[in-house]
Image 1 (cartoon, helix red, strand yellow):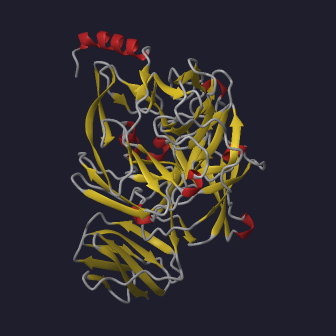
Image 2: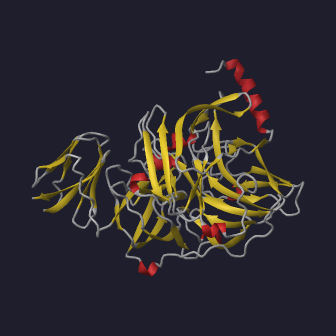
Image 3: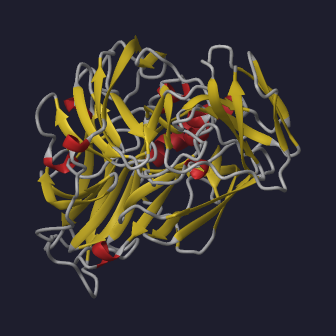
Length: 553
């Protein structure tokens, strides 16, 4: 702790620093065959002379931008140097369940986890952040996150700005709350705006068409972004890739975890500057960040505040001068071919940082699979928000398209592939999605991306099964017994290698029970409620997947 007589001086330095503009930090971009991310503790100075304890991914705060290419294999080694367990979720990427990095995945202190998967997404702006059970907001609040930029041939064929850090900028907006000694407070709202970890940030842009890749990385605050001079932004992409054509808008709402790529035409503005503003005064009372006096307080709530100063300099040697009229075709799954419709009702009453919020009357249980989908099928989901506030809903493992908002077509800039959708109080939003990636025994999550609500169990999980293909038999090198067989009330398993989780499936491949084991070599399941029949126990070990069939009497 700092001596109390130093606190006034610290606050004066901090306040003075807040009025001094700083160049926006631009994380290094890495285009590698294998990425290494070291998650550990650091000390960082956001304000001169003020030390803040942080976490980072191969950095003091935030992490490098990972460049990936559609069709290639991505390999990421996650090294955990924290004193607690962590993991990493590749937000928006269509990654098999065992590499998705959801709460079932625990990377213990000192361990290294290797995630390896084919990059199946189209060109777009994605990101990575930790997703450990009940620790997500704490670890993200202290700085673990970073961008993922996917490249492909269709995007490369367009005349778009794409020189990283010159006319193509990653921009993550976060609000953070500091205490008097300079450290972060874990709170739903902050009073300081950080852009790429920079307070009171500015960016130098050339007088031509430039690209901002916007990400809301805040715990709970929702932003209504626009330019102070009224100039429209041309939205070219959302969460899951490019739109069919640019969409001009003077206001862009961005909820937690959402991304949007926008083009700004700065031609002829050399020597000028403009300001990206969040128009918090326009947010309804039900939206976190509004001036709702019943919720947690912040000096930024319900007011318009600056986010990023844009200073316009000379054009580059090879500028982009025009905004393309068209981008890439968007192929939306046909809702008429949906094999199932599901309704997800959001309920509960609380505050932005606390409360009991539920999905279909349920809260998260690590050992319960809430839904089972079949590989290659299309479904329509209807999300109904009966709670007292807006929730940004995120679905792992897929991109979805918004069909309707309260019975009407969504705004044009929301008509591309997405993985986060803001559902306001009393709103009904209809989505369509196609399940094309297997979970392989590791469930995908769907949850509120208000990180406070997520950690407070506003989350459920689902699996994707291929009923036409059985799980591979165990390698002869792995000895795993499932007994007794036949079984009546209880089923036991014993393995020679550590077991991560077990899943019990029926003859149609539907997961009926999932239980995290956490590295134990043996365990037991209650099966007294199962009807008689033939089942299989899928055992996920640290050396491979084992399938054992048994009969329930």
